[in-house]
Length: 76
Image (cartoon, rainbow, N blue to C red; front, top):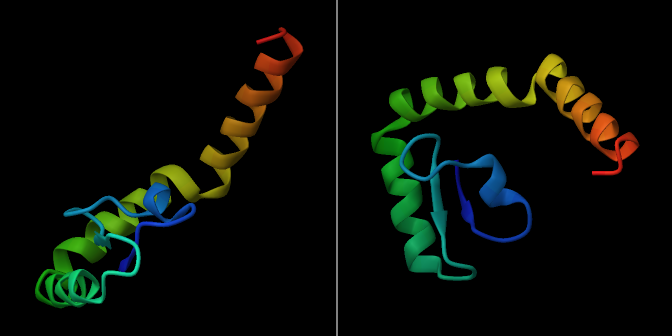
């Protein structure tokens, strides 16, 4: 995935591992990121799948919510 580094996107893309991030609205940098993603599609794809399985699957997301709620209840 190649995208501009805005909003929550940087939390979902690890530059050089799961895709590329371009400075906001820098079309040349985004184009270079797209080229890099095409050239590295197999490697980025495998890393992106691992990222999703480890961080965005229901189990780790639910664990994160449980931890956040437990911290809130402890006053943290």
